Amino acid sequence: MARKALADAPAGALVISDTTLVQAAIATSRSATISLWDALIVEAARVGGCDRLLTEDLSAGSTIRGVRIENPFG
Image 1 (cartoon, rainbow, N blue to C red):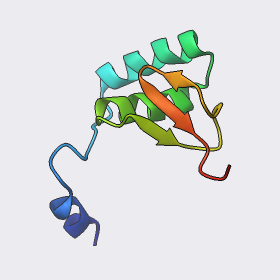
Image 2: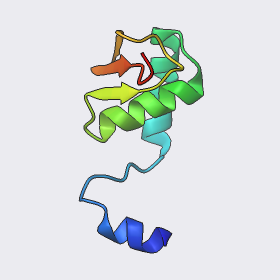
Image 3: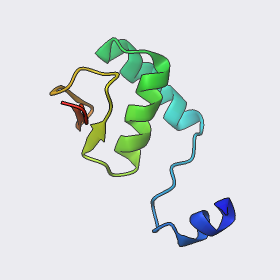
């Protein structure tokens, strides 16, 4: 099932977690004062070409590294 989902995913839909992504997340964590784990999600969204991120864990309405944060529940 996972193999099929991966095969069917559009090009660029998969972001690899590598040292470059982690280093960017560390910098984002510090500059935006968010957890490293949240920063990894923001950086993965940015690298993947997303302009918005739906989450209830970050401040809705803010923009971090070009990614607008939106709360899907309100």
